[in-house]
Length: 265
Length: 232
Image 1 (cartoon, each protein chain N blue to C red):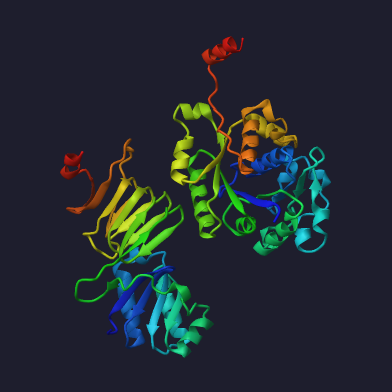
Image 2 (image 1 turned 180 degrees about the horizontal axis):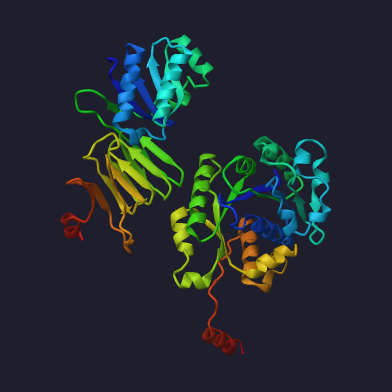
């Protein structure tokens, strides 16, 4: 039946859904999977910018739905990764332009030619969220280790369960190790205990994520340059079904570095 | 059932209120009294109204809807054996067929005179933020009650898991209702008309507790009686 459709959602805004979709899309494409990322945030189009593809958009998702173009015409192929495609959102419309059935149809048409369809859901639990999860085979919930984001994630998990979509999986984004160690931030165990769903990734806070997104070249392009870059690739591998151990996010102390240096010598 | 008798059942989609036979205005008065007696139990809920064989016109049903709305209760369905009443309800955009939703539990609370027969329901999942469970009888949850979730029960509440949300036992006025949980750390605890918060300090190692009303206050006591200690 072709591609697996995966919707990334969170309830709360600003937790890093779009960044995650951009990086996960890049990572999956780099791992050789034909991947299309769909920006479902009609009216607040962002994913194109993070991927550096804004200036290549001719048609968008709403044009496809309303029959002004064919699906293939709206797909923007990434200039660096031949396996990565973007289906952009319309910027001049709003969420009412899309119905759950429309998204199902678009995804059905995409399934044949792709391995993965990643859908970037709008924040909130209204219409935009509804149509974004409609075609999903799997749902990834993104949250930050803070009480408001976790509370909203819990609400969204409840809604997803009510749709009988199967249990969603969790990504904890923007974890700050220094703060966790000082007890100033919820740690991974706290979040997982409350939400009680499977964890599929932990992404540490990293300035480089923002910097690379601003430049339109997501961090995942340079896989081994940072912990966060590796985290995105590991999430991609887990999404593919591989069993990848979680990164040790603890910064090695001076002593450990020295020890490693001595041993490697 | 005489007109001043009202039965409340818990169904999948909320509550089913059955009005006793007789005069419509008497039925409404009885409903009004019932809503006023336990406002906390009904507030924010959804109700289906069983009016029996009465023949009602739109404006009469609308009266009931307004009365419920006044108590912040949403009327979403009217059940009747009378086709004219069904037609009127449909005209008002109300559901007339509860479909699969037929009362899952047998009659739970019966008003009037004798000791009510209270039954219970078991929920085998975690209640998440934004989810609300309202039931006239006892509620047993096998799972957690997360922050932002609420349970409003006419009887006792037993949670085989963590309680972090708002739980209200004895919401129909029963001060003898209790709340038990493996880890009782709710946002708010209510029994009948009493309200309590959890202590600010979070216990490191949670122990099962039971909360009840003692001398006008809600008191939570660890569930580690001598039997347990002897067994250990």
